[in-house]
Amino acid sequence: MIEGARYVHTNLVARDFRALAGFYQDVFGCVVVPPERNYRADELEKGTGVEGVGLEGAHMRLPGHGDNGPTLEIFQYSQQVQTARPSVIKPGFAHIAFAVEDVVAAQSEVLRNGGSTVGEVTTVMTSDQRRVKWCYVRDPEGNIIELQTWE
Image (cartoon, rainbow, N blue to C red; front, side, top):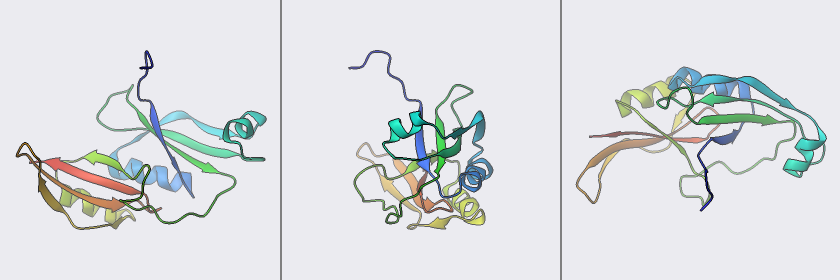
């Protein structure tokens, strides 16, 4: 075990970091944690292994964990690789999840702000007989978000 390890952030690579950061601010109440990042140095090339790369972006404080909680790091790189659209069943990181009071209302807010649906709102029973209502949606760039509430 790594002594002193703690969760800090998850990185989301964006096509337009300002627009995507605005979505997470407007829909989920994420707050920008200054300073914005703007890196174009040998150290970035060394760390990424990509020659001539630069990036700009920001950290967004995730809701519900106070001023020292984890962040969603949204970066836009100067070079971009086209990839297949994210899938809920593709190995690797698949989605970010938010607990909400009303899944249907939260889904509507995502749609109103440029997001889209993946599937339908549904409720599942856990093995200990608790119920969770949830759905997957996409942010404006197609990244998958789970909305959930325990009933």
